[in-house]
Structures are given as C-alpha cells and as structure tokens.
Length: 117
Image 1: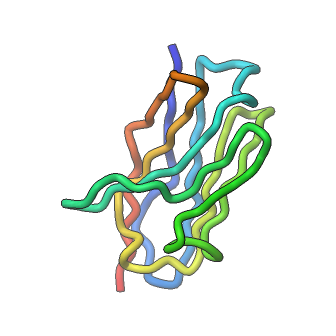
Image 2: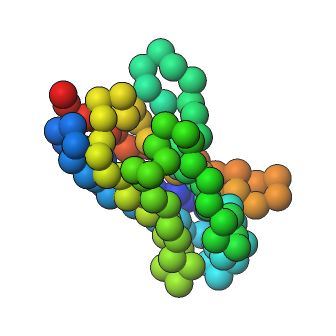
C-alpha cells in the first residue's frame, strides 16, 4: 500500500525559511516515474498547486511562490523536498504532498505551515 508522509511544517516569522519533506513508502524503485507535487490549502480556500516536479525533473511553480520556493526530488530515497524561503503570512496553509502516475494518485495527510507577521 502506497503511503505519503509530509514533515517539516511549523511556525516561522515572515521572511524566514522552512523545509518540507515528503517521504513515500510502498512505491519502491518505480518512484522515479511518479510525478510529485506540493499543494496547499488555506482556511476557506481551495487547495492549490504550489510546486510540481515530473519524473524527468521538470518543475513548475505557482506564480505566488516563484523565486522563493524550490522543489526537488531524490529518487534514491523516494523523497521530495520543498525549500521555502522569504516566507510571507499569505503562505500560511496546510501543505500536502501528492504522488501520481497514470491514474493513480496518492495524498499525504498534510503539514501545517504558519507564517507570523
């Protein structure tokens, strides 16, 4: 059974940094063909894409985080990382990791990120 687990959230002041990690289990060596993404959902708002990375390493970012966030993957460890710098109060949300290949999609439980002004 595939599991996706986020970690690294917390409380940080505006301008600070956090590093989110997404670990997967049950995927094994085919992790490398999965597309991975980070999404976030703020209170009373829809879940939105923050950053994504394809199996080939191509990345895309929401306009609101370009230049501040960096997504990367380690296929040897089956993990994905989101480095978040210059955090703003509007980045406050629950951050979710998604793993997907073809019609299979797996979500983690989320990790809270709170940025104080």
